[in-house]
Image (cartoon, rainbow, N blue to C red; front, side):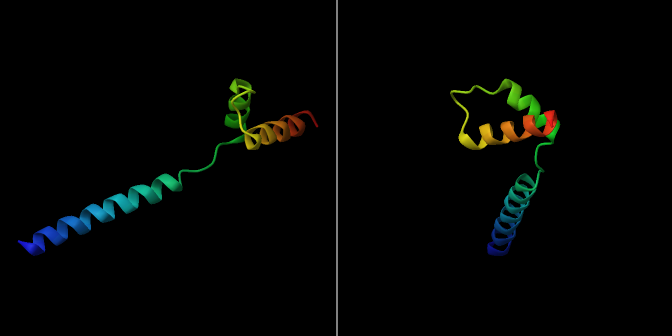
Length: 63
């Protein structure tokens, strides 16, 4: 019985670890997606990092 329990615990840990790994490596947003997010961005609620990225993207697009 203890072997079955340890196998189940090991399988559960492996499943959670793999889903966390896959979630963290999902990929970054493309520039097109970022531009859409910038258009929908609320100036009052956005953080400084988001504002800086949107400024950089608009400068790159216009220049």
